[in-house]
Image 1: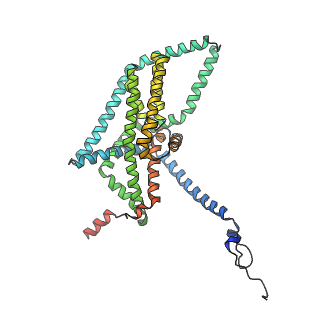
Image 2: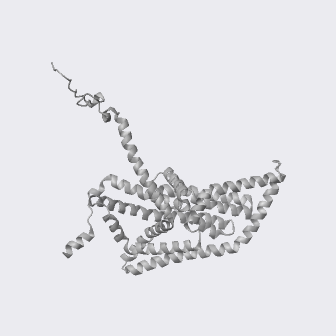
Image 3: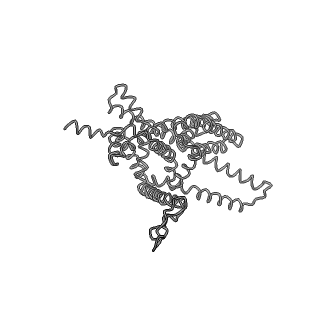
Length: 390
């Protein structure tokens, strides 16, 4: 028989609690295991969400620097393989970089010149035909069985314009935030050129400096994930240029066959819009449908619409699964959500950079979680140089 206070019983975890030495149940053991796991996940998710929110806030505040830098990274992902190809064929590095920079500037300048000339020559006629088409459609509605009055049409038109302005406010503000003035545009172009040139010259050295900012035990994972992400980004840019070219040639060629004016600006607009996957080419293709409706009437507009849908079906069922799917490895639903979230947060730049960011981060996370970096430990080239000099 044991006298005095009874000793605490040792209770197994299966019984759901453990008594303290004084007979009272400990609070952490009284909470169910599921609640404790949910709580542990909750505070960690809150910390991650807070870090992401701070990062997004800083990006928005520094958008005039971040957006040109990201454009420079995309251009570098496109030009680095070309520069490497020239160097493998015994071109000097400085000459290969110069040819790449001058070549991309010449291509962009030529496209801008063609668009400006075509729009300048065709815009007055387009404006006149648009006014005539709107007037004709207005007369049709007034004399139609709908029995609409002129005041009702004016009210409906005002509501439609207001709705378009409200829904496009995010994209418009995003575009204006990048270059609301000519000074911002000029500074952005200079930043893109300078950053792209530096990345082509010493991109590896910059990445090595970034890796050395992390703890020594984490450098192998950071370096390996960065290389995997860069490989995905370079493949994505090349494939996206190919897909955009197919969309531009297809829709622009159909517009040219239908003898629509501004066929070259339509093709350029489709090419640029295709860099926003899934939705970009569709939105820019509506320009071709609108021009066909204004100039050639509803029959040609329907043919143009069918051509745009055909090109989009080829992209969606052939190019995206076979070409883009092997590179991005992101579900189409995730792509749509990423484009929508990027457009909501940062306008047109956000929609443009959403998919490459998601694809790159997905590859980097998959590499780290796979543990492949443990087989290839990171060796600091600077440390080797120091040892050799010593």
